[in-house]
Every structure is written in C-alpha cells, then in structure tokens.
Length: 181
Image 1 (tube, rainbow, N blue to C red):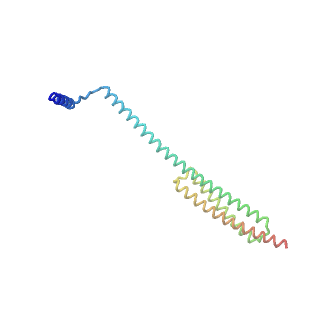
Image 2: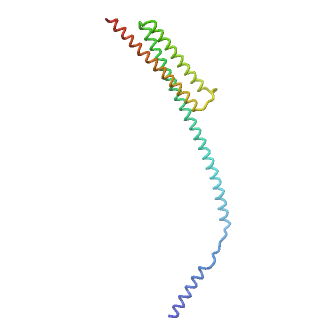
C-alpha cells in the first residue's frame, strides 16, 4: 500500500510540475508578414468603403434635386393646364355672347371681365415662364410657392369666368323660353 501511495504521489507531482512549466512563445516571421498584409488590405477596404459612402451621399443629393425639379415641373404643368382651361372657358363665353341677343350693357360687362381674366391668366403664365427660365435665380421652395400662388390666382379667375358663363347661359335660356311663347 505504501508503494501505491508513493506511486500516486509521484505521478501527481509530475503532472503538477509539467503544468507549471513556462509556455514558450514562438515568433514566426511569416505570421508577421500575414498580419501586415491583412492591415494593408483592411486599409484599402476602408478607403473603398469611404469612397462608396461619399458616392452614395452625392447620389442621394442628386436624386433629391431631381425630385424637386420634377415636382416643380409638375406644378408648372398644372398651372399651364389650368390657364388653358380658363382661356377655353373665356372662349366659350364669347361664343355664347355672340350667339345670344343680350343687352349691350351686359355684353360690355362680360367683355370687360373676360378681358381682365385673360390678362390675369397671361400674366401668370408669363411669370411661370420667367420663373422656369434659367436667368431667374431662386430656390426650389420659392419657385414652388410662386407657382402655387399663380395656380390659386388662375383657379380663382377660372371660377369667376365659369360663374359668368353660367349666368350668361341662364339668361340665354330665359330669352329662348320667352321667344318660344
């Protein structure tokens, strides 16, 4: 039994002694070269990523500018189309007035209002032409505000002419009714 305890003690001490031996660090020159190469590649990847971010920011800014230009163009088209509808309404009113036997004072009043409306519409369209031209410096926000104001003015003018047209058509119908009796 003494032998068994002694043998266990010797094996145990040898295991502990091996565990306490200092660990030797191996310096591998190839390992340093690979590390340096990895650092160089990482720097290159960081440079490429930075360029990609810069490009993406510029692309985003360009897209925002194009988007604003599209909005401005759409608003300008809307103003021009509304102006065309207003002028068409004025033409219809003139045709109605020519074909009707209305009083001279009423025809004169209609003619003045139509002339005023046409002048306003043409003025708005000229402002839009100037705003969209390259010689007029203003921000996109200012352009949109000006276009919206002109659109409101043209819409209001169109409404007043449409009301005048409706009133004129009612007068013409009344005159036709009275003629039929």
